[in-house]
Length: 183
Image (cartoon, rainbow, N blue to C red; front, side):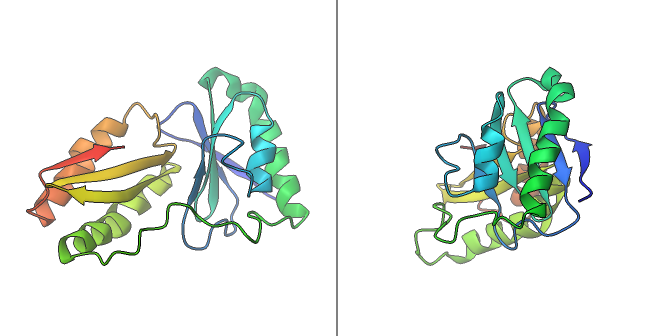
């Protein structure tokens, strides 16, 4: 299996390109082994010392270490674990796995739908190219709350991305938005 790596704006995170689908619809993000119990691959990656997060995107996996200087020792190990997993046809997620971040079932109003559409259509594809994801959490009192995942979490340029990129975009198209915050 051919796996290519790409640097991301977050020096502690590498993006592993698999050239095949990883996640069909939603992304998944794990920040520790306990959270990852329903994903055999994430558990195996967390078994490596220094792994602090694992993110599954559409056709890539981003892995973050606690120090960027460790990648020279760990890049080939991560590639081997990912390659072995896919070559042995092990499911990425256990069958009973469910994303615990599903929305609460309330109907979204028009403003929230517009915000979500802008994020899904214009923001998420751009940050996915950098090995991360930005996910809508809520809109309250003019403030959009987003969570940063994968390479975006802890990235030195994430504040600039949020304020200069996402906030500017949302304020332009959705006058009700006054601020964007990461949670």
